[in-house]
Structures are given as structure tokens and as C-alpha cells.
Length: 73
Image 1: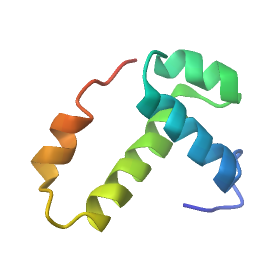
Image 2: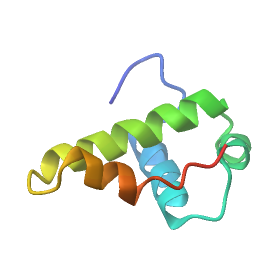
Image 3: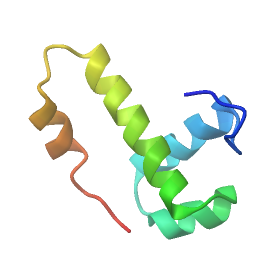
């Protein structure tokens, strides 16, 4: 998840993902708050969900998709 091309540090990425999982904000609003693009918000959240899904082998990919299926743009 780390790259020299990323605008957000690991900690800020984690805050962004937690803010999304908490709910209530659109990707556009999160992008504005964290000063990144909407695509970056989507990418960070997607990577975090994929990582969590990989760490929970008992949950299938469909379970993770349903749990996070409340995509807001």
C-alpha cells in the first residue's frame, strides 16, 4: 500500500478508510477532506477491503462485497 507516488501517508490512508467505513460521507466529500481525488479514495478503500478480506479466510469474496456494497460516489 505504500508508494512514493501516494499523497497520503499510511496513517492518513487508514483514517480515510475508517472515515468511509464509519459511513455518512460520499467519496467526493472524503476526497475533498483528504485533498485527494475521488479515484484515490476509491482505490484506498478498495485496497483496504481486499486486505481485510484476505486476512479473513473464512469470509468469501461475496461476503466482503455484500458487507461493503453500500458504495457511494
